[in-house]
Length: 378
Ligand code: PLP
Image (cartoon, rainbow, N blue to C red; front, top):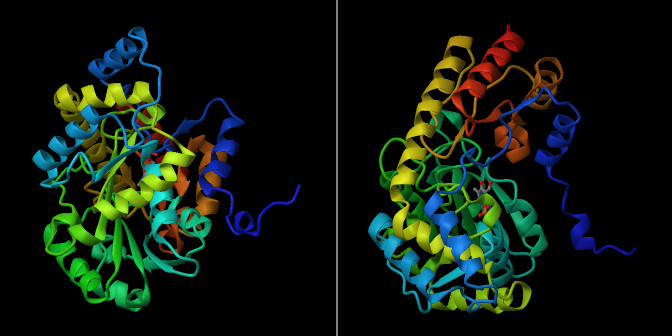
């Protein structure tokens, strides 16, 4: 079969390759996956069940159910001070994954340079390639707690870029950006006329202060599309639901693709998500508390082992430094001790020499996994 040249530029996922290795054994503890070990809150599940019982199995409006968009508008205003109209500035997507893909296809012209934080989530680069853009990694450094700085943007040549993809709290490092860290980045974007795609899917999972969205800074709202969703904070990965907030013309352009490629996001999931926003704040708080306890445990264990580990303050990952080649280390750890983690280099060159360790597993499993990692390190 003849395959497009565009597809041939997209490498297979480095994470998948690793999981296939892990699946060959049944004694493996996986700290590799990026999803909560919890189930979605009961109220959200009940809403999904009830919607099916009531026969709500049709398409919804392309942009998503009005009731859900209203809840999203209310939630984002109350929680992040993001002010968007449910009518024209919000679109409900099949996960943040679809939102980012559609935004890239809607905003990128062939050859456009798309700056992105390095290391960051594995889908951005392929998404840019599929939109015929040119990825431009912007290295962040452990010494700067993996925050994006003006200097890093300038060093990478991002003044020539058309778009910047931000991911804070960050996957894979767990880094967060406070308002004072975002200001110089926003200034750079205004000076060089960069638009921003800000993936804030981990916004609720922060452990030292509240999340700030770059879209709330001066002059940024008109040049930013914010992404968030239900996969992480509401433990709803399998329901596939996310949303994007942005200027009317950006959201309309995204909808132009979404209405043909997806029609509408899954209806049952939209009912669950509406209820999640209405009544599940306590459940989220409880999960965040559990993640925080696990985060502290994992950080303290790495310290005891003598592996340098920057203090991740968001998401559910830590990013310890390991001696030598990270891929060889992760393969050895899997082979000898049956613990699966993801080599940092999968997330970009700046991730080399690190591992992404997810603490979205219960404490007993984490304890056993950390003992095994310690045995391997020794
Ligand atoms: N963005 C980031 C930073 C992620 O880590 C993930 C999943 O791991 C996604 C987006 C995908 O989210 P969704 O399940 O909403 O498609």
